[in-house]
Length: 90
Image 1 (tube, rainbow, N blue to C red):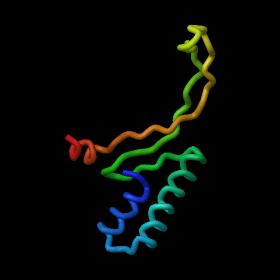
Image 2: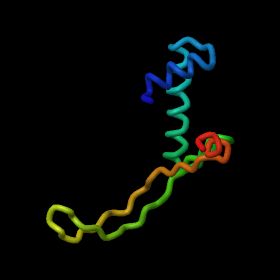
Image 3: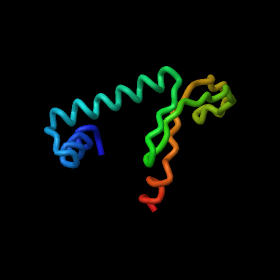
């Protein structure tokens, strides 16, 4: 599902127009992005939790040359599915 499909699904589920659904989806994405940028967790009960984790610097291997390289430390986004979502998928 891409963004356009999600907007159509939100419009169908909520009874909103596609224009209003687009504003709602973009608003949610923006709010989640801004919260993660500031280091906050975003918990949606029944769905899951988005958080930012620190990845430490580590050693890796360049597959083309088999040479050892250092992979820099970075921040990554982690998603942990909620219990209800996990049960629905099973």
